[in-house]
Length: 286
View 1 (cartoon, rainbow, N blue to C red):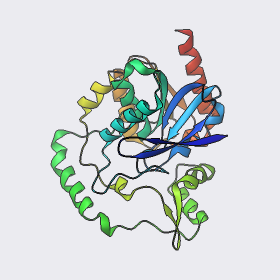
View 2 (tube, rainbow, N blue to C red; view 1 turned 90 degrees about the vertical axis):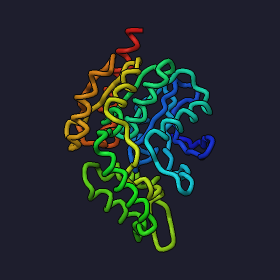
View 3 (tube, one colour; view 1 turned 180 degrees about the vertical axis):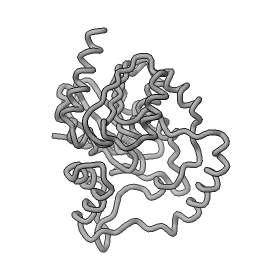
């Protein structure tokens, strides 16, 4: 069973799903781009003994969208999470993230290492980066998308099942997992259903870290890190980043688990077994 909480930070009200004993050891969890807090619905029941808090990141799920005129820079997410931690008052905790959320978790671990007991990353390590020479092109493309955002309309689905079918057709995720995400990510509007997520999330970012900057943050991680890689993931770019960046992590455990990019939803028991094994192993070394 899960419960819902709201967390008010300086500019936003964020929602979260929670599992486990409120007095259990805390895990703060982050979902991937355009997903939501329900991404850990299938995994949470296997993580007994912990207090798992899965956030709807800004613009996703039930959390507030950023104010008019604001953008969704990756670096702003880090500031948001630091505020969340101030509200929660946690002094020592674990981080868990999937895809984009794994990038958030790894950066948080790199800038406040003294508070992090362990880090669990599923299909992600750091964020997308760009070279200096790419910035002129990125800026003009982002500006053009921003100017035309009012011309883009959210898709409208006649019913829930149509939305599930559309998302499932994208591929790489089981229908049962799609239903879990869509149940939290869809809202009723006049004429049918559409996504809760902020359309501005799809605008190309105008701000990226360089690879050197990203790795400097990753080098700050002192906690043990479990990097879980899906053996059937088709995200070759991310696999290249894993291989390039893992040397910057001082205490890395790298495991492959059967599944695609959303393996924590499709194959939660196997993912949980790897996580529990990791936690037991690092506990022995303390």
